[in-house]
Length: 287
Length: 288
Image (cartoon, rainbow over the protein chains, first blue to last red):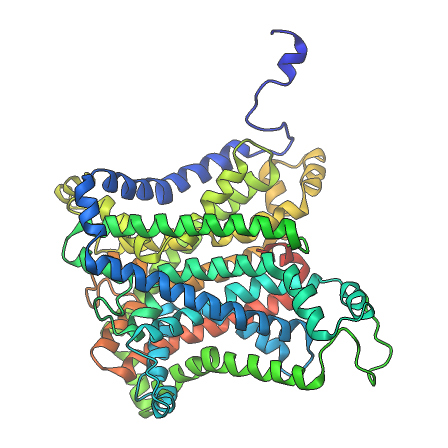
């Protein structure tokens, strides 16, 4: 196999290019990535691997761990659903309607990206606590919106909203109006056009937004702990339990919970990605 | 994308009835008011609840000033480092075709899908007393955890992807043509970067740095795990907000929080202006 033809298709790391600096920039990037991200993260896996199977299992099946995981994943799912509904409405209003202050509303959607989570946390707690502006109103109708799982959902709705709006919005802007016109000429009313023509096409983008909001919600800490009340077994989230175990110097438990959280989150993202690939083939506007 | 609707008098078949339109608008605005605008307003109202004098007094506290200083130091170290990384990574990924590129891009995004608490935890496991490095560091008098280096590392971890993520799609879209022209005219690699690439990417770069900085100054979870919460020494502004809040010192907590909220507002305004004015120059980076 030493013919010239074989030599020319031999394996090479990169395509030839006249641009300089490949070795320098890639080398630096890889070194930095390894030092900051890969070594610390593999340390977590290594620590987990050094736990015995029974140790790991007893941490995982601990009642408090199970409840914390249930609270984290449950509230993140609920918040992601709420965000999908309102995120799509907000994106629709911004993309389709002209009204004064539209640009400001568009900019405000990014607030949760820019506002530090601790600030969001104390602000939401001040509003939704039983003696807060909104909390007091909700109290009259018998709803308690802070210091319980509802409070966690409120914080996660705040955190997750821009993920849905910012993924759906650009795809909505690209929708070809002819599709809607075609639906209308074929006798569809507006309701049918929106729900049977437009929304299915947005499904891949909506799913992406959902999974981003969900993933962020599962790991969220700063905005949640102020409004959650942090009652063990009831409104204690998994990241907080990691912090508590660390403060007790129980590194094994902290590590195990972290690994379980990462694994479940990655697994769910994988499933969502598969559904998304399927829905993109089936309906996609090319999202 | 030209959709000309000749007459507004008849409802176009591609929009909703006025009633539905107003209902949707009202719903969206109500939702945004309840979840975004009111919390933002609450921060400032609570901060000034007892008047401007109390507000200024709260900010003049030595521990608060120390927290502000530490936050500036931490952002001052971690943002430039991630800036250099972002430019280098974007250069390697956008200008060259090589094996494993997609995988590298995925790895760069990894910190976004890791809980902030876990981002802090990994450094505790790496440098803490129970780790392989811990005893060695201790015997050499090097403090990483519960000290500034740990806070900087955790901040770098959580803000790692911001600059790279803005630049990679932007530089990919711009292609290699300009750089190849400069090189063929005899420019050195550095000159090409300095006089050709940098002007092309400067607005996207500023955009990325802005987001990176906002997150670096506001990071709570990761920093909370590695900081040790030593007042006046290892408390950043967000951590200080938590301490004041837990002490029921609400005016001071919201006063410090209002500074951070002010930073967020400035970030949003500059971001919006950049998008309006240089939309095309940073557009590629906006499509996530």
